[in-house]
Image (tube, rainbow, N blue to C red):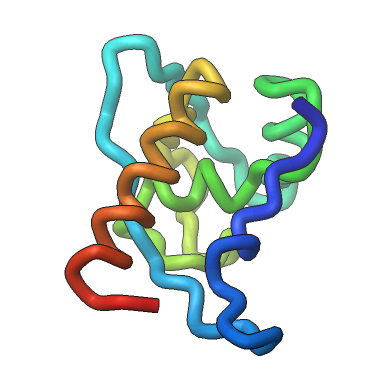
Length: 105
């Protein structure tokens, strides 16, 4: 899988609505990675773990204490890497579907 359009469910009458920030549950298959300030980039980490540079946002959602910005991650932080990719994307889709069910689009 090279790309997943996480915005596809948030178009209403041709206009994009707000994409909610959801968190991913931890799984026993998740991997850990030590973040190094000025060395680690989430696009490169995504490529290393998933074979695609487009899933840095998924890594951020598995580490909600750092908000949505890579610059908020302190040096030496152990990041949770959702793994495998397909399972993590299904977890994301389920979290989004639950959000839509309770709050709408």
